[in-house]
Image 1 (cartoon, one colour):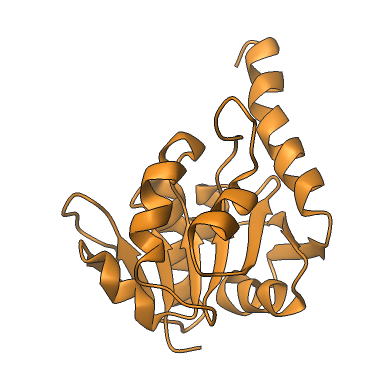
Image 2 (image 1 turned 180 degrees about the vertical axis):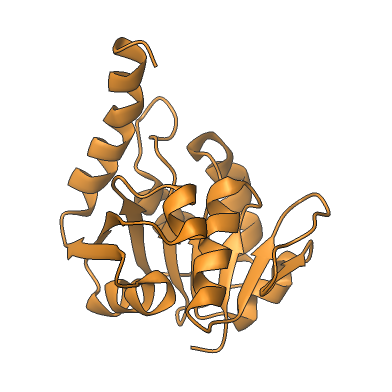
Amino acid sequence: MSCVGIVGGGSFGVGLGVAIARNGGEALLWSRTKRDAPEGVTATSDLAALSECELIFVCVPSMHVPAVAPELGAHLDGRHLLVHVSRGLIGDELQTVSRHLSANTPARRVGCLAGPLNPRVLTEAIPGGGVVGTRFPEVAEAVREAIGAPEVRLYDTDDVVGVEVASAMVGLLALAAGF
């Protein structure tokens, strides 16, 4: 894999970049605002630069996906693999982020990354795990190749909707529990 793109310069995007670099990959991190990137990660404010990456992680909050998807989609084609880490549903229709990305970008091989995985697990290489929800085995394999490590276990399932809804519900449960 030539490079791995990351849309969103927040803590999860940076964590993915660090994990990719640690695995020997080239991480290209896009952010609307200019930012410094950790060692091994290249920062850019040019969304078109991500078109060179086969695998692209979308790491923006679900409420921002409708604005980012068409911008990103203008630079993609059917060879790209999209994996989002957004925890939430979109709009009054409660559309999943994967469905929104499929409908608003040329990329059709889409998935989501969820679970107890968090930025600290990625940046510090401490034990953790996650699940890749996708109907495309090549998407799960690309994620494993990009960020998998002995201390980071990644499982895959074709129940994309189940992963996305469960991930969205985590926030509600945390609120109900007082977090």
